Each structure stands twice: as C-alpha cells, then as structure tokens.
Amino acid sequence: MSNIERYTEKTFEKIKHVTEDGMEFWFARELQEVLEYTEWRNFLKVIDKAKMACQTSGNRALDHFVDVNKMIELGKGAQREIDDIMLSRYACYLTVQNGDSRKEVIAFGQTYFAIQTRKQEMDDNFTQLDEDGKRVELRNSIVGFNKRLADAAQNAGITAPKEYAVFQNKGYQGLYGGFGVKDIHQRKGLRKSQHILDHMGSTELAANYFRITQTEEKLRRENIKGKDKANTTHYVVGKTVRKTIEELGGTMPEELPTPEKSVKELEKDTQKYLKQ
View 1 (cartoon, one colour):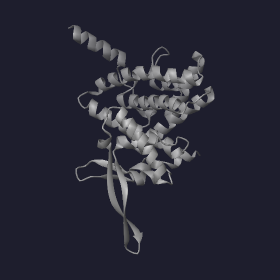
View 2 (cartoon, rainbow, N blue to C red):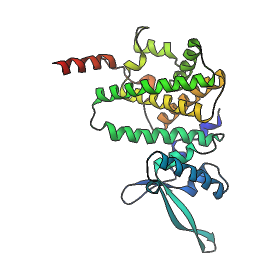
View 3 (spheres, rainbow, N blue to C red):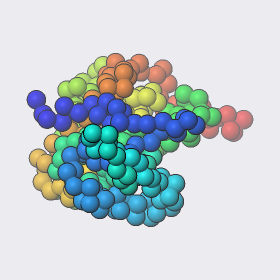
View 4 (cartoon, one colour):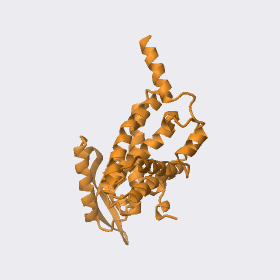
C-alpha cells in the first residue's frame, strides 16, 4: 500500500475553521504541521512564494493571507502570543503548489485543494447552467486542456501516437479503478469511433477535467522525464482524484450513468435552435 493512502479528505478538513459569517479558513501553523514542516521559518518561505503566485494571478494577497496574532498555552497556565496567518482555501491551494512535492502529503494536498478550489469555481460559474449546458462547457474546456496535456507529455518524452495512447490509458485506469479506454467504451456501449468524453455527464466530465489538469501541472512542475515516469504520474493522479471522490462520498466514475445524447448532439441541437 502506498503511503499516500494514509491521507484523506479529513487530513485537511479536520483543521478547517469557519468564521461567524460562514467563511472557511485554515491557520498556517496548523497547516505547517499537517504538511510536515518542522520549522516555521521554512514554511514561511513557502507562504511567501504562494503570496507572489496570488499576486501574479491577479488576486490581492491580503484577501487570502491575513496576518493574525493568537495566544498559545505553554503549560502551568502560562501563555505566549505568536504570529499566525489565516489562509483561504485558495491560499492553501497556492501553498501546497509551492511546497516540497517530494512529500506525499504535499502531493495529496495539491490534488485535494485543486479539486476543491476548482469545484468551487465551477459551482459559482455553473449556477445558471442546466445539466446539458454544464456538459458542453466542460467538454469544450477539456479539449483545450487535453492539448496542453499532450504538449506536457511530449516534453516528458512521449512522442509516438502509440505511446500517447498508452499514456492516456494509464490516466483512465487510475481514475476508473483499473478500467482502461476499451473497458469504458464497452461499459458505455459505444462504437470504436465514438469518443468517451462526449458520452459523459457533467460529474464524470468534471472528474476527468481534474485528472487532465492536475497531470499536466504535475508533469511541468516536477519536470518529469521519461515515458515510464510520465505514465506512472498520470496513473497516480487519476487514482488520487478517485480517492478524493471516494472521501467526499461521491459516485465512482464507472458507475455514473451515460447520457442519452452525446455532447456533439447537444451542440447540433443548439445550432438548429439558433438557426430557427
């Protein structure tokens, strides 16, 4: 059993706090312990990098990293005031992205906070969309990110079409509990020419969206080289996304229903409607 399986959703949710207004946050010093940093000064370097990434992305660091002071117990009734930082979920995401990726808890945290942050973004953006609208939106987003994933895989050393097919299959196997592309085609009752991503509901598409984006980021961030390492990375990311879905109480991707209409059919229906 991989050590990463020791970590679950509760690893980070158990140290989450909520303000009186219902805003969730994490204390940096508590996150430091969970991420296995022994020295506060070393963890502050990671926080500083996260703040810079926040500013670079066009967000105000002060909105996500709030300096606070709090009292701690020293024993025998004595107390001491220490500095701490209140972190938003986005701040936690940036922090783990800039942490030591050699640590398995960091690797798990990168996927967990990425999924939760993007899920919140999708929830905010999709509130006005019905199921068909969400499917079309997600499928179109995946097209662009799949191109980026292919480019990252090529940089890692996967150049031939057959090699890329193996690479893609590894990602599906990780996410679908061992089922590869052919298995998923069969379970959905699709023809060989039909693309499985066109025959997924929004929940299943979202799981694959996370698999694709996190694999692309990990390949680039860790500068992974070699076909075997790239394949393993895709498989592990898929498996970690699957584990997170399980921890959140979700339905496994292979158990989700296949919609009656494909995304391409939905787009054709929309075009016909617009013409009319």
